[in-house]
Length: 297
Image (cartoon, rainbow, N blue to C red; front, top):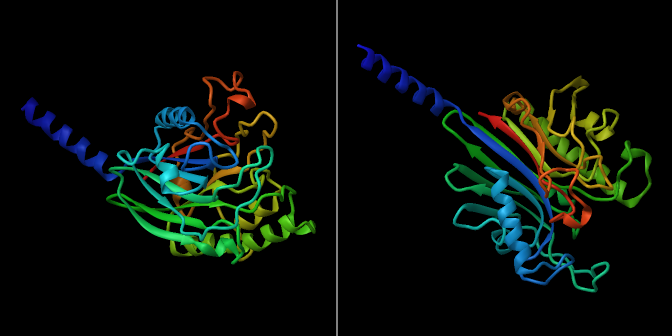
């Protein structure tokens, strides 16, 4: 009798575990990741790529949204294809420019997704609207993460840099004018998913301090038809890792039910040393640290 009961309990536990799963999402602006050694604005040596590979293992990530990557080959130097499925946006190549400080030519800055093999997903493709038909602006990149019950849409984003004021509409800078045009496009994408009840996660480099409660971008995202919308932001209570720039511009934003899936206390900033107190700017593998959050869905 006891053995039958034990078999029943084990079977029930297996059934329950199969109905939901955890997915650890990470966003990382990996800073000018080139596919060839010694190229680009941050020329890396073979040893640098090897250090980054080791660091990635410690992330224990399932999905990594990447920014500033040249190509699939570049990503594969850090995320080996035997372990990862790699998607990079199909944005056309833009003109190269002279890198500041080293006299080299820039490589391409695209966004990507690295998805751990074994995780079921569907590639949706580039969200080119974010580029405003302008050379050099980045596309978004969308994929669907699928389990037995739910589908989670994830978009890797890298928005226009240079607009760091709380209200972009008050600035006449070119960067803020471009950023102001991107915001309603992203906001519409968010609202469509809320209306249709499609859980989503936006993650990447927003180049904006949207964790600040008075930030206009955040207020635009959390309002729909004059009514408040509940969104989660994993960086709401956290600081960025850069010694000189503690206010975060990388974010993981969840909505349309995805915010309810967040595992409490799972939000994290990954430092490149064992403790944040030890890390100096010179020890950073890129000028942004990865950030992460775990969802149960």
